[in-house]
Amino acid sequence: MSIVSDRQAGNLQPLQRSPLYWALADALVLAKRNLLQIPRIPELLVFATIQPVMFVLLFRYVFGGAISVRGTSYVNYLMAGIFVQTVAFGSAATGIGLAEDLHRGIVDRFRSLPMSRSAVLTGRTLADLVRNTFVVVVMLVVGLLVGFRPQGSALGWVAAIGLLLLLSFAFSWIGATIGLTVRSVEAAQSAGFIWLFPLTFASSAFVQTRTMPGWLQAFADHQPITAVVNGVRAPLLGQPLGSDSWAALAWCVGILLVFVPLSVSLYRRAIAR
Amino acid sequence: MTGSRAAILVEGLEKWYGKTHALCGLDLVAMEGTVLAVLGPNGAGKTTAVRILTTLLRPDAGRAEVAGLDVVWHAARLRSLIGLAGQYAAVDEYLTGWENLEMFGRLYHLSKFRARHRADELLERFDLVDAASRPVKTYSGGMRRRLDLAASLVISPPVLFLDEPTTGLDPRSRLAMWNIIGELVAGGTTVLLSTQYLDEADQLANRIAVIDHGRVIASGTSDELKAQVGRERLEAVVAPGSDLEAAVRALQPYAQGEMRVDVDRRCVTLPVTNGSGFLADVVRDLDAAGARLDDLALRRPTLDDVFLTLTGHEAEVTEGDDQIERASGRREEVA
Image (tube, rainbow over all chains, first blue to last red):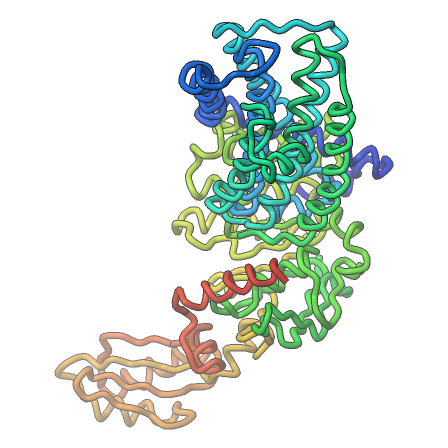
């Protein structure tokens, strides 16, 4: 029978490559899988886009009039915050997707295959990076429509985009860790967002932190979202890169150093359902 | 095709989920090219055993070898030699059948060309060509299960684990699965089949291990297990108006134990020597005694009888036990 004879003929022998090669190759196979899903569940992408659009409109037209910022118009101030909030909230999708994979039992199959142990997570975080990039581009267009007028050099744009992508990738690993910890899809949906609210709102994303009470300002000035928002905002407004850019870089690298090994170790022990 | 080496060897396997003792010294052996059925109710430890043997779970004690490799120490190498298909069709809902198989081929580290070729081949073999470019969520239950089995056969693994492969399938799909499994075994694949269906074990397995509460309570061939439960029984229903007492007298010499007579049903039941060679004699003797028959049947003990005798409870088990196994699976995760 052909199912069996092919193995005997040696046609089904695995390729021999280094573990590093497979970590990357397997991750790309799974990134492709996750990207193929996107157009087949269009509602997910639609809602992932509508939510930040609502925030743009809300802050631009409802709250914006009551918020004054130094040195630029509020919409110019706002958009860096929106970009960062968009990719930060996008990290919840990473956790929800993994919780779904666990729930459906496909993780059992992945874990029984001779594939790289990190590939399911890397594949998903890479795919989420692509999806987040798409949503940020949509946000940029929406921003331009409501009066966002960025300045800044080409180099500044590269720095801002680079930092945004890095944050997206780093936060996806936090989302992955949450998804693998709570394990149920419903719990991943709430747990994936809940920690993001204090982090994004008690930051420089929508208001300047100097308007906050002292104790809150102390928190807001020393957390990753503020660092990344400032690191993205400065170059888009044509201001020089400051110490915030380096702090943002350090936060992202630090998050990756903690959450990549943590989530991979959780994944290795994960059992479906 | 039956080899003389053990493809699956399990000795004293133990697994705890918190305070639940899921496996309490499980022992199993499956020789190369044979089917071993692990038969037991929900919560007996079947899925735990399969998960340990497929490297998904580490045992707390004991030893397990598959294809000559230790499931803990040689887990990475072992994964290139096994296939796993289960009751929860573990394929991607949103990808097409072809995309699923190609993806699993790549993840088994076949070349892109081989993975594609293999996907085409398996779709054809499993009668899924028409559905190849449709997302799996549009598939019927039987089609999903076939795709799931196809995915486990991408590298044609020498050892295949099927965790309740036909649970929830309609009879026709079940029969189709049985045929495929039969062909695989004919081709030399060793199969460990966990099931709660007695007829499935009876139909497919060379040997059956009956497990309950995490240990093997009986094992052997289907016939050996049935022999443990008792002899075959002959049931004769004597036609109305015909002489029941004469029939009883004629049957007496064949009884290998106590004969029972149900006067209302006009039915005579007697334990007999195994084998059907004496049936012609029985019919002739009854005829000579002037007893006409409505029905004559040789009843073999079923695996249901086996299960009931061994465990003291029916093979069908309530939802509750299933939930215990799932809940304990969850506890394991947190630990």
